[in-house]
Image (tube, rainbow, N blue to C red):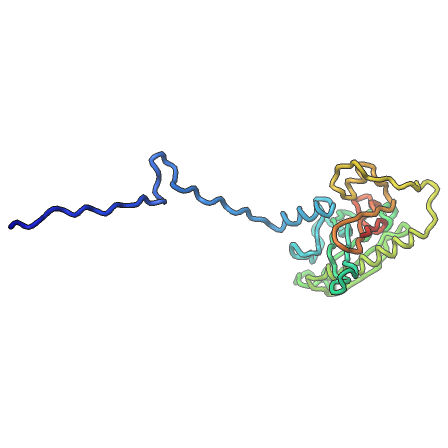
Length: 248
């Protein structure tokens, strides 16, 4: 008997999902790339949330390395916000929640910056390298003069946490001092609500919209339970200082 030479039926093949369909489209669309966020994106969102100008620099919380020297063509950093947690949570009382400022290209006249604080970082002992230590000088604009109210030597990159506590305290003391002083004859006594205003809430925006006048007390209910110090709007180069106190 002749041997059966009938060929075996080949097994059925399943279509490869990675092969290209007849119409030229892939069987499965590739996953969309995950958006990458940078510290600049995080900083921009935080500045918007806290009502600070977009060109401000956040020192605390740490979103980038703290500046250890003054950038070129910069005189100092104007303090815009110094927020310290209160005793609502005893375990975090005194913790720095927000410390931010903006760069001043030139030294403005102190007469137009009453109550503002400026930070001047320099190299220790006049040395340039290395950049792992910094001297910080704190200046307060008061009575037509820039007064030195703080000085720290050879601080490490966590210097903003050290300086922020003093900045908040000085701004608070200056606010209390100006509150006890008799008002100037031209100072309006009325309090104007901000209802119906659709701005972001930054002190610069409020000044631009003429909803706040330079030197006025400004109560700002910002986020969290903080003892907050925000800009006075006094400085001609930007919004800074200690005239305005945000209470929570």
